[in-house]
Image (cartoon, rainbow, N blue to C red):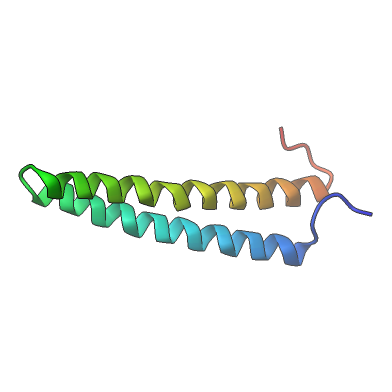
Length: 81
């Protein structure tokens, strides 16, 4: 039994990672726009909160995509570290 996923699973992982990164970046951009357009107060805090909430899926997507890339490299027998 192989310890690394096959090429189909790696492709799905890369796709999922890309979608999560995209969702995270959209939230980060919206939060950044709110922070830059508002002078001060509660709306600025909402913008910061949106940026932090956007960072979570972006980081998760990067981890999933990185895992797929490491798995593909390992399956090919190349060193990855």
